[in-house]
Amino acid sequence: MSHRVADLVVDTLQAAGVRSCYGIVGDTLNRIAHAIDRSEIDWVHMRHEEAGAFAASAEALLTGRLTACAGTCGPGSLHFINGLYEANRNRAPVILIATQIVRHDLGFESIQEIDYEDVFKGCSVYCEMIVTPEQARRKTVAACQATDETRCRRARGSGGRRQCLLARGAPVCRSCAASARSPK
Image 1 (cartoon, one colour):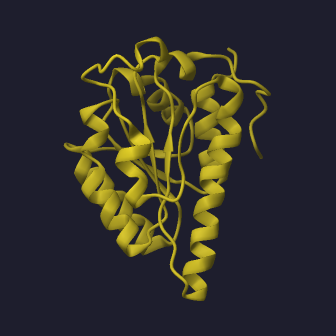
Image 2: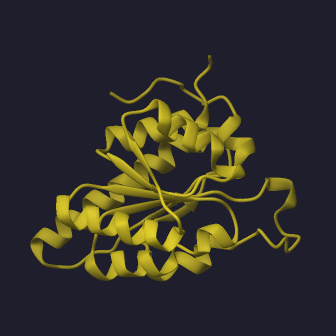
């Protein structure tokens, strides 16, 4: 079985210390959910995305560890917003994995299409979309590093915010990963 982008993203998050991911599984998140299931990260199914973001924030505050939440494209990911603003306010190290509609449908105002950068810019220090398989590791590492920088600033008393990573939906997550070696 070849190493997929979803596996690479999850392996990178696990190497960064993520132990839990709170969210709701949906069609565009299935590859990520399966990769989490095969990893040492615990998937915590929530009844609502907002509760997932609040739970991730609480765990991150209590443990000081990077904690994840994840949701499907469109309105599903928008439900995380209140919990993410709370995480930002409390400077909790939380990362959101939000999926997007398929690339060839972007720009046609689909009901599921969301401009995540515009929506989440007020509560994140890193908000990027993984558009190609080659970007997966680099952007996931950058999001995790943004969290470390945030924690260092918080320890020095100069603030910081939480970050947001956007993973593409099924087509990219299903793709074979470039440089398929897992981080150790």
